Image (tube, rainbow, N blue to C red):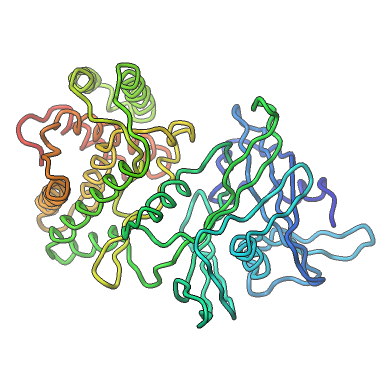
Length: 462
């Protein structure tokens, strides 16, 4: 085993290039606060390090699995962190764990076998939800993610076990927090309630580590979770963009997505506690709106001239009766919706907005936040293809169809709360403005146009 000082030095130049690493504006200042090893053979060592980056004002804790091999892993050359030498001068190749089949299989086994590993100041344990036995396991890392790393498994089903089929996916959380991760808790609750709008839940990994900020001096949270993988499924964002590009109708799909969203909300409201939105709850939400407004104006000063109109929208919304608060998706958009082979739709990724603190994302919220997020997503499809014929009309038709599907399933008219929906959609557009200003400036006009429209709009919502 290599010393932690060697590991820290090896990670220092590597973490800053990873998509999930948030502290790119500063030179990483890393410290290992805990670790554990997964069972392995003599060919490879499977270690997970909990690495605290103290270069930022609020230190961030990362989960970094590393495999150590005497020879490089040719199939995962891009996942090579570095080559070092041990105490006797033998070369050791360090790889990013999820890309190494040995780590991938060990993580899946920890979940399915309800295993536990105790390490240096930390431990991890598997929590199985659905029995799963498989043979000839093959793994690969799913591309495109930013805040986590997902491992996709293909395997031969055990004919004697009623498992989910031949594919699964395990999401390894890179940034760790004390408390339950909403992605695990909400999807588990939906699956347990019999919802068909989420993949089958296989299990998760929980862990514990030192944290002086907690009264007990220890933090506990979710490290990873596994679920059914819909191989070949296409997300609704790609489907919608393709439909607009070919001038095809998408309102039937939009209506079905609206119904699926309403199903998710109804199931969560029945499975988990709901609360009355009291004055304090409303005041907290409105304060968050104003904070987001300030942040958006700082990033996109052209919004500043709309402050008075936006604040008027917020004041009106704050004076309305609010629906009961419940658990929601929290970051719903077309990219979080999968089109399934049987014609249905599944909703995934219940972590909530990455820019919101975990403590906020685990609280009951207004279901209209999800509705507003999906309305914004249809607007984005049109905004990213402004030269497509009838892009604006296409977006408006899809937005109306989504609302229609949602209303049909709930039996209520969500737009009876139009001013409240407007306020949440404005807040989402301001969130988008901050993100685009920082990451994709060429897309900034999309949320800015929506902010202008929402701040000034009168008449029926489209």
